[in-house]
Structures are given as C-alpha cells and as structure tokens.
Image 1: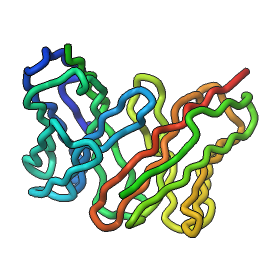
Image 2: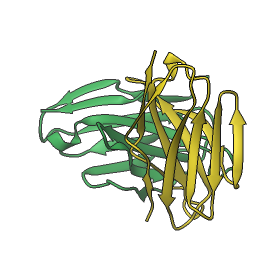
Image 3: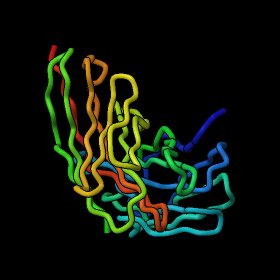
Length: 114
Length: 110
C-alpha cells in the first residue's frame, strides 16, 4: 500500500523550462491537493480537485496548471519556470468532506529553478 | 477567504507541557486539523476537531472553540523527538479547500 506517490523527488530547471510533477494515490480518495512550502511560509495551496474532472484554484495558482487525469492521478505543470517557483511541492489526498478524514501527503518534490 | 494565525516559534523543556494556539477566519468551516512535520519530511496528521471540546490521542490533545474561532494543540510529557513544526489547518465545507497556517516551530530543551 504505497499511499501518495510523487515523482520526481528532486529536479533542477533553468528559467523558462517546463515540467510536470506527477502525483498518484491508491486510497480511492476523491480529493487531491497540491501545496508548495517555502521557509517561513507554511504550506500554501496551489490547486485542488474535489472530484475527478474538477479542479479549483487555491491561494497561489499563478504560473501553474493542473490536470486531474483520473481518480488516482493529479499532475501539476509549470509551463515556464521562474526562480520564484523554487520550492518544495507536496501532493496530498483525502476523502471529500468526510469527518475526520486527514490529508495524506506524498514525500515531496524539491524543485530548484536557476 | 480563509486565514490562520499561529505563533512562529515556541520553546519548552523536555518532560514539560506546551500549548500551540491557532486562530482562524473562514467562511465555511468543516473542522480544524493539526499536522506535524519534521525537517526534511512530509507533514503527518495528528488530530482533528469538528465540534467544540477536547480530543485526546495519547500525549497529544487538541481543543476547539467554534464560537471563538480558536483552537490549540497540547503536547504533554515532551520528548526530544517532538522537536518539529506544527501546522493548524481548516477545511471549508463548501468546496473542500484545506488551508494551512504558517506553522509553529517547537524547540525542546534538554
């Protein structure tokens, strides 16, 4: 039982390059989330998806796009990376609006944009 | 919108009790959660409150007052391994958005 799997674990990009962060969960959860974490800023929500086929903007969506490919997979795309997007990215999943259903996090992707 | 406030750092002594407070503002509230994160790791779930009152899980307890938009995490019998960052988070019952506070770094002195 893998839980939430994120790939890659580490990535270095040059400014202007594009990449897609992959996330998959095997817990049959409806809701999936992408967060970024910067020192002193906590976890900030980029995009989320409460069900297959729906996505919504979070707190810091600019510069990102997402795709809820199916119930298991939720990808995050940087079309033209910028140094300000250097961060640790976490994917998470949960049951939708379920009492006491916690977020399950992947291990994170450490992204550096030079 | 939603926002959460929690202290940036707290220091306590091994074996003691520490309380980490969290105040929140949200339009639709479904519950307050707490997560722990060790350096270099992913956040892990600690506790959840949807109703007023105290929830206890071993050495950790969490409290919620919905009328005051306030909650806290209580850690008892502190151990060095409790040195970590702690985050409160609110879940919106309208759209399932989950927003985190900026986190509280807990330092434990021997």
